[in-house]
Image (cartoon, rainbow, N blue to C red; front, top):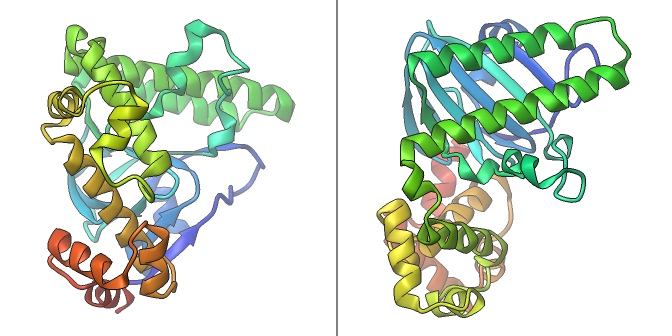
Length: 289
């Protein structure tokens, strides 16, 4: 299975967001391209509207039925899988299309919290229809003959509203008390730190110190949010990045090890084998072939 870097290349009108059906994509590209494993440089929302499909997100299979919403972020690895007979909405946008924290008021800040959303969200019938209506409206507006500047502004607000609606759905699924709990907020800050420092900070103590809390309270927050301890969250993130680098770069293994904070390549190889069941070379070969 070949993995390619997939950059944002909108078809037709040059906009910072593109909305289309997966069936349209299938007509635009080859079967081989559909089956490929891609490393995205942009955000993608995939809302399955009909049929069933097993897609791959960061090397993990995700079973999707109508109402399934996938949130694929820049840097993640994704494949549509080889199932046919399914269709769904696709919304592609660059991260910079969303307003930054300095560009919006406090009451709109929740729309910036894409990290509040899981990779896979199952929508109720009512939420599914609401999402579909918003996305269909965005597609129609993107094709209107208004000035591009006005269309960009309109789509930007619509996308923010869509993401906010999804965040509300996710909070509802979690339960209001859980979604707003101090523990979950601590975990969210922890996850942010992990994303920034996983290549250098391998110990829970470093994160607990940065968050001014104990290792025990940080682990409790991680378990409450994910069912996994803080150490497991850190380890999983390092292993995931190792997988991505092995598959979508030709970087020598010793440089991957060094970049992920391992003093010796042998230590990295032992870590990777323990976490995945494959040696780094074996894992790279199974996707290169």
